Length: 266
Ligand code: NAI
Ligand code: 15L
Image (tube, rainbow, N blue to C red; front, top):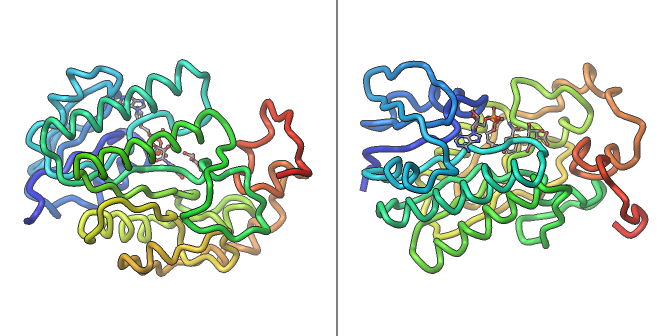
């Protein structure tokens, strides 16, 4: 059945604003939500301020919604309390609110930091064991796991996108591998909103020559990326840190803070 009302969480954030622009008019109603202020509603939009750490408010937020694009939460490393509230409690409240509201599917903004401690020389797919590079990456692994629970136990479809680096352009050498252009981002989200699946993990990346990730699962589901970070290579090729932890592991700059592990064993 066609989706009538689609909710975007994190609508005040960078990717939430990109989605708001690109999905405008695609569904009868786009419900936009964030704990921060958003631009006023335009025709076909509803704007609802909500802190995802508030269970009752999140339950109300999900009422009458067919699909959720879950982008709200802490998007960088943080303290345990910050991560716990926005990304763990927030995820629990969102999936539980979705269950109570009878939501059909959730497209989840997971992150490459779920697998940030793999080496860049290793091409990994969506089936590898998680190797988070910090508290933030761990919270995204939790998001994928709660998505699996609610998919398998309650039938809420889940499309977990391990997004690489979704920005206008790559800004360093690592992003020649991890970049996701905005047009390809939109293409992948539309696959999440329309494809036939129960629970899937895919990588949010463009068709990058230097990729770290085998994204055949996304391609199988209908993703057709068109952009390649390589066109920016000359401008950013030399942008490295000189620290092997960030230059040789997939998670880049998220790896060095507090690192006291055995680099040789990774
Ligand atoms: P952002 O930080 O610009 O946006 C996140 C939004 O979530 C903010 O507007 C913030 O106010 C909101 N938020 C935070 N805590 C909240 C709470 N407790 N309740 C309600 N809203 C809350 O981040 P960006 O770049 O737009 O990323 C969006 C999502 O995509 C995030 O979940 C991030 O982890 C994920 N992601 C983004 C990547 C990227 O390259 N931009 C890469 C990988 C994952
Ligand atoms: C993420 O998960 C962050 O949300 C984003 O700001 C970038 O740092 C990205 O990963 C990345 O790894 O480049």
